[in-house]
Length: 466
Ligand code: ARG
Image (cartoon, rainbow, N blue to C red; front, top):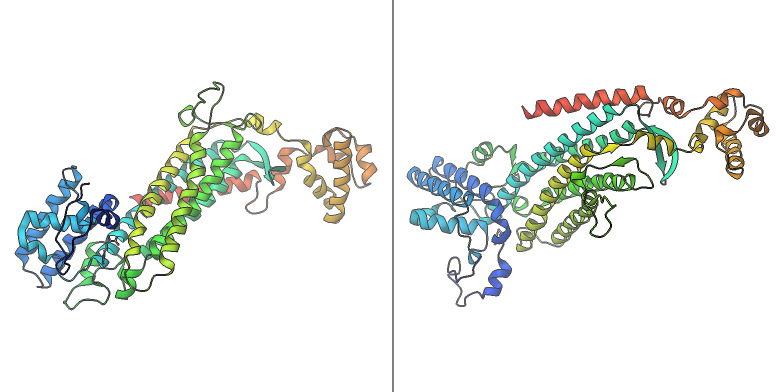
């Protein structure tokens, strides 16, 4: 983008703005991304002005057609953005002057860039929230398929990254289904606050024209019009909320990425990611690096950064509009791009991953069944605390003698408590899993129920799209 002198809006000043100041002020290098929203908003605004008799209908038609030509110019890459015109709004308006002459000056009747930019950002955020929800729904559908296909696979469940209790692999997968379901509902909820129409607030105080805000809101698909003109031009909560929901979602993706990275190591070997999502080392040919997952984990940091930046930009601003707010854009656009690409890449990565069920099973030491042995004693009448104490002594004895729990004989067990009977030797991984049949637990029957309700949700997504 070149820099030239620009006279528009500088009528009362004697000195010209320097090139470096122009560059500093300009948002056109990034807010060009709002062009579709800006043009659509202007077309509907002009239509409303004509309906209300604020401008002649003939002028509206000229404005609408001019804007349509500009849309095509930008779509096809023929449009010349100028830095000296500051932002997307002024670039489009200036081109409209070139195309239709002085009539273009009527478009900005009953409007300020302050309510205009708020409108554009809301339209952009609305579309972005829809795309995020669709991407997450796609991911959730894949997770349900994986959970259903691998219902028989048992893996070690962890706390503190120490083997804790055996769980179904599907149960673990469905934990992410739950996280992403909450992410979906966060974005849907955020959408209800995004979808409020700010145009008609003017610079801050409202307008001295008989505007029809409901008409504009209706045409642009908004749920409501904003209630306070000062708030409407100074509020960026909807962006902060979006970025906050994005940060949480990136955190979920990052945890999943971390597990994928860990599980694909030689030490774990639980999974092998698809070649299409792996990279190789420039010097160590044996390596299959999970760079895609590493980047999803890393990119969480930059999305957190955008959230913090925006909270900080806004915290000291007096009402109403301040130019600081222009700083909302780059971080927001990057948040949207990063989040959507991370969801899509992680979804493809997960779908490409092969599961090594045997490795999961054989990685489990018998000690993972220690809680089951304690629960066994509770079944025989001991309190859980007493049972815990007995079993910790059993485990310590077994480890000390380099034996697995199922290698001890019943005599040795009885040495720790008379309540042990032969059936203590019959505790298995599968039995441990099936015993955890409390609602939301890992027992196969419970997990199957979860799969069924997840499928109902997934079918609901499909219906939502129709
Ligand atoms: N580029 C500006 C922004 O993004 C548009 C609003 C400018 N309003 C103003 N009064 N200078 O915030």
